[in-house]
Image (cartoon, rainbow, N blue to C red):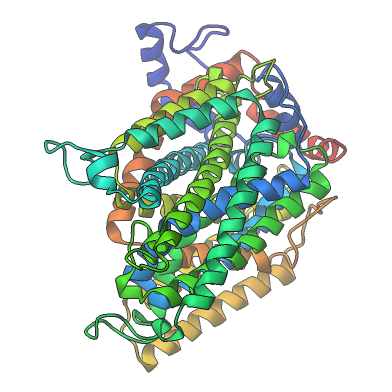
Length: 587
């Protein structure tokens, strides 16, 4: 037992106890930050800390419905207009294709973990069993931030589309402007708060009933989606794909160049927040081995096709430089005597989509926080599952209130880039984790060959991204990019040839290992490089707060739990990991 610590005495029982805990912070960090959990721990002991079990009521159709509902509403009806207007132009359709490919590769990585370890923790649990507690906590903090901010953004867009549907000004009638607050935080949106709170009550009541409600709303929403697609292809004009409304604006299909496609892809990546929420439902799926691969990957493919068709439809209807960034599809028909009614119909359809997106995302964020609570790095009360509803009520209520507060004040443009960078960071980490877990067996395999590969491949991808962003166009740039590509392929092939996998998934695994996760790593880094500087400043600030929270609270809380026997000892992992993983495959 560590000096200064006593079994059963909390680090937070008094100011003196907390002071002693802070004095031992370096030793506790060394002991807990790299502490790796096991599949057995996550599937059994950690899950038991929630008290009651979540109910296994979901099938693959529920997961596909949740995936569709979670992604479609947030994507097309929030980010398409802004990405087309200021970043990609009509080529936003290619932005969606690039982002969809990146999401599908990441979805494969999520699926392997979710099938092998069907718990509610998603990326937090995946990284906790791979890279340890600290990496999992930083990722978990970014995940929760990502969900809360995206849900706040989507709930505010619901107000904008409601205004479009009933033909009134959102700013003047549905929001309250406070002159004393800074721009971007001075328009209060009470309707968004009401919507968030009602959905919070629904998801606290029952997961299965929430899924049924989502299926109904998603079916209605998809009807509106196909209506918009058909109307856009029928009434739109192909010349809008290459001609702007203002002759002074850049013309052509690529008005902002090829780089604009990738900048747009980074922004519309917000559209794919949702499939990872499906992976958090793994603990409530009846047959994870077959239902999760269909639910996660199938929904990503279907949504990507829908997004691309919607983007073409919008680009045919309105020149890119005339798109309304707040409500692009409703505004496309505004002012037309013959088709003005369509603006109201689109607003209603978007409302259904936004509600389903909110419901799925809020289901996911609560389950992330629930499992983070099981690890004792946040208060354990968030881990509790209500015995009657089988849902994480505490986590759902807390995050619902937090989302409502942010939605009340914060404008959409303040939220979007910060959410994208958090999403890309988490997907990048999961892609690294699936490679590491396949090639490294804790306690029996030398981790350095795999770690060296992941670091060197990431650095090569980062250099490629810097060259793409900052070197002037020309032959020199092309040669440097080609050289980087050759180096990356050589690194990847050498790793594939010389390092053998130590672990084969029993039920479902990422195909073409390590090529698929490596491409996902590259695409996530590349899209991260497309974001603006202020996004990184905000992301760095939030990550620094997460590190501070870990140092001041989380490491001491998890240390106390280890001393009390509520968490495994770090030294036990190497002894039990192989046995535990084998046992988990039988679940």
